[in-house]
Length: 81
Image (cartoon, rainbow, N blue to C red; front, side, top):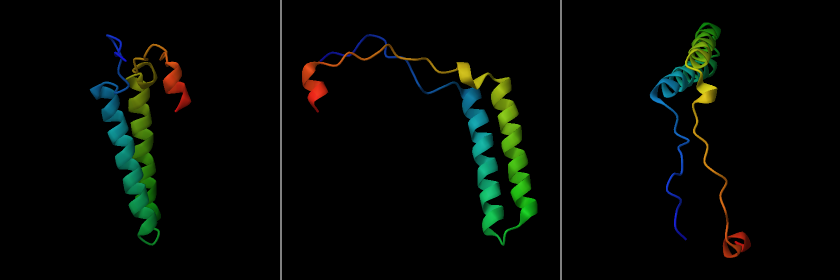
């Protein structure tokens, strides 16, 4: 089976990945804070970083960033597996 000429991309843009990286750092900081006792100050700092990442995600319009593929047409042999 040959692939269509344009398959699109679900990768997103660098500005969206920046927002995701900020959110991931916030979750990591918060998780470290929870495992250190818990240390609530570090946890809430992590939660604040996640909130900043959310604002960045909204600012770069992360939800309109993905290019969707056309629907995939499966052959009868592919449907059996």
